[in-house]
Image 1: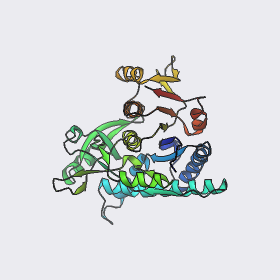
Image 2: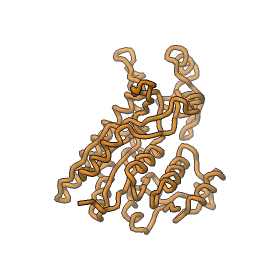
Image 3: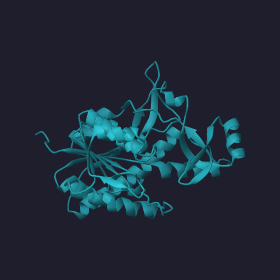
Image 4: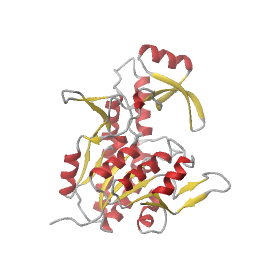
Length: 319
């Protein structure tokens, strides 16, 4: 019997895992994810099918710092392996807490985390001019030494009001998901899938067909949109740290956006209303989702997810 329920692809931001004022302990992460999972169970009870993806920025950054601090004791892993490690870490936390949330609701629902590789093009222009900061801040001397000894590309960057030198890596466009058939098979078996975490593990395909991991970071929102396109999702739900998308954000004339067309979204994006590296990639991902045939995209915070699905809050993007 065909499942006629609407499929929501849920892209969970970092605040669903770690709050800005937290250090990101295991207890912090389990507590935050548990709260988010209560919302996911409510969505399921409303009759929606769910598939989840999530960010991994703070966790990958912490792991890179751990590797730097222990480099004299154990060998460091490349960035694609770090992506895989954090996919497993966060997938476990979501899988565990979502299972527990369903059990509290008196139900046993099959849930699976899938370590996912995302296919990118080795000729993507971002490989020629990397700009995505990863890992810790360095002094200029430390950064230039890493450039010489490890071949890192380093730049002076600003992040959250802090300025310093960091390693930068390419952020290529996602072409597809290597495990797409597996994801679809799990969905058809009524499994809630947690997949493509942190934007997925970036891999390129060699002329002989072999897949090889690359030192890069795929934008998690764009990877989430690609996932939504592949599984023919009806709704792309982006959960972040604000209830609405805003025009003139953090200015006296700040204005929340309730509903917007992709044409209007493109206009505001072009005019610089949405900060790069923050809201801009979310808006871009939502536009792509609608253009690829999706019904609507919603941007809101985890606390307002149910209200947003019921049309009471959040920013809705339509054709």
